[in-house]
Length: 388
Image 1: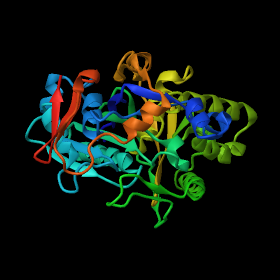
Image 2 (image 1 turned 180 degrees about the vertical axis):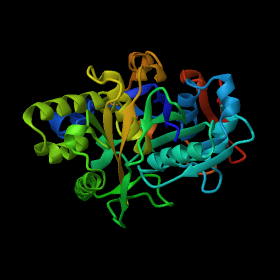
Image 3 (image 1 turned 30 degrees about the horizontal axis):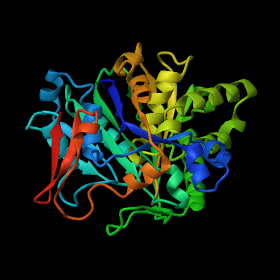
Image 4 (image 1 turned 90 degrees about the vertical axis):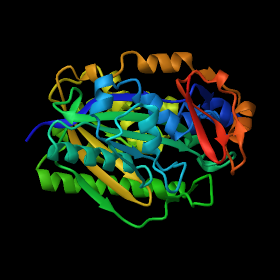
């Protein structure tokens, strides 16, 4: 069977951010609670001119060649921040990216987990259709509301992944272990713009799912912690992944524990500065690991833990390919962070209430948004997307 996996990866997040120390001070909290207890230093802010569609296409546009835009025949869009209860966000992405009209387009939802399911569907589709190429996009806006306990775990961004045979970055092993359970730890009712969450309970369920799936994985595969070079976790906030990793560290000797902790730090460099992006969170962590680790080499096995509240979890492994960094966009993250604009807390609070609310036609000032693809407003209850 052909080797199948992620050939290219790309990331996009809006051009503005807030500082977590300043948010803590504005909320009368000790900054250490956010910086250390939660593990976040900055948070991406979404302007009215960006939504999940524009973020996804801004990410994908950076990695697709003209030939690939014709060759892709399946487009999978994972999000829990959908813009329409009927029409798939993937259809908008297909048009904006100039992809072939002879492609399937579908949107998937299961809290933060759907990106992983989309990736597995892409892997299996390519296995059944040799030579096929599938575009998977995971794009979300984590939104809990001002002055809420979840405010510190907001954020936004999109990860785009091209799945093919003989991939440049990594191959996806067929060792997936998964589980689901009806849990009310987090939900976003159709009548609400902000999510509802029981934060402490959700963190407990997350760790419970990881421990259960890790034990099942070891039983089914015969592999152990020493078989892994590193782990990438879903990171709604980066301290969450660290807690999960610490749950299994006693299975390793001191040298291995130190290595895994070092690799974890590499895996959360970007997430600490972006915040939560739901479906894309674990894949931003993977991206961060690939770029910031100094010890990863071809053939290394990495463990991936994906979790979506409500709840569904999955653990699987991937194997790094020779020259795996060639599938990433050179200098992408440095450019993103170097060019981002600092936003004050009062400006962030005003921005939070902006954007599209209801069905009132309006136009946005797109001149201040440097991204290629933007949301220009609403006309006749239709979102207006432009490239500039």
